[in-house]
Amino acid sequence: MEFKGILSKMKTNLAETVSYSMVLNESIEVNSFLGKRISLTWTGIIQCAGCNKSIKKSFGDGFCYTCFSTGAESSPCIIRPELCRAHLGEGRDVAWELKHHNVEHIVYLASSDSVKVGVTRSTQIPTRWIDQGAAKAIVFARTPNRYEAGRLEVALKSIFTDKTNWQKMLKNEVDDTIDLIDEKWNLYESLPDDLLTHFSDEDDYTELKYPVVRYPLAVKSCSLDKSSQFEGELTGIKGQYLIFSDGSVFNVRKHTGYEVSLTVK
Ligand SMILES: [Zn+2]
Ligand SMILES: [Zn+2]
Image 1 (cartoon, rainbow, N blue to C red):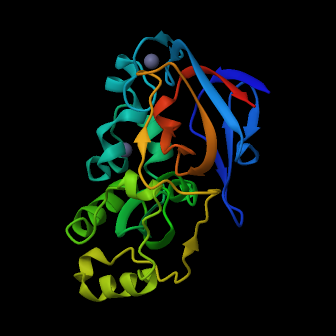
Image 2: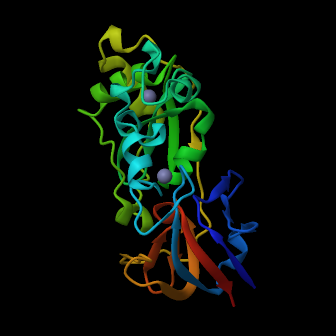
C-alpha cells in the first residue's frame, strides 16, 4: 500500500484504545499498521499550514516564517495563555481570537510520570490530552476565556510542571500511584479564593490507553530533515508519535506540511 500527501497532526478518536488516523491524500487508519514495516519518504517539499506556500524550512507546527511571526495560530498566547488579549477584543487576528480564545477554556491536571497542568479550549478535550500522551486527566476549572485559564495556570505552575517529558512518555514511565481526584481536591484546599472562581467540581477523570504493542527502553527521535527516508516496524502510537521496534520515534505533528509518501509492507 502506498499513500502520498501533505502530513498533518494525526486525528484521534477516544475508544477503549485511542485510534489514530493520518491524513494524506486520504484518511488512513494507522492502528492497523502495528506490527508491519512502514517507510516514510519526504519529497523535499514543505507546504506552509497557514498560506500553503512551498517552503524549505518550517517554523512552529508547519508554518513559513511570515505566518509563524504574524499568524494567529502562532501568537505568543498559544504557548502562554496568560498573554491572551482576546477577551479585550485584541490580538494578531481579532476575528480568530474571538472565535478560538474568547470562548470557554479548561485548566486540567494530567498524569503520566508526574502531575502536569495545562490549558486548552474545552472543545479540544480529549484531543489535547491524547496529543500529549497523558495517562489520565481531569478538569480542574472552566473559565470564560483563555486569559483567565492562563492566569490560573501560572499560579499552578509553581506546584506542577507544564511540560511533558516526551522521552518518559514514550517509554511509558507512568506513576500509577497518582490519584488525580486527590490531587485536585488537595489543590482546591490550598488555593486562595480568588483563584477558585472558575473551579469545576467534576469528579470523573478520563483514562487514556494507547495502541502500543511494546514500549521502547530507550528512544531516539528521527527527523526527515536529517534523513529524508526511513523505514521500520511500527510497534506503537502515542501522543503524536509513531514508535518503531528499534526505539526510533517519529513526531508526526512536528512534520506538519511535509509532503511524504508512506509505504506499508
Ligand atoms: Zn505561510
Ligand atoms: Zn489568544
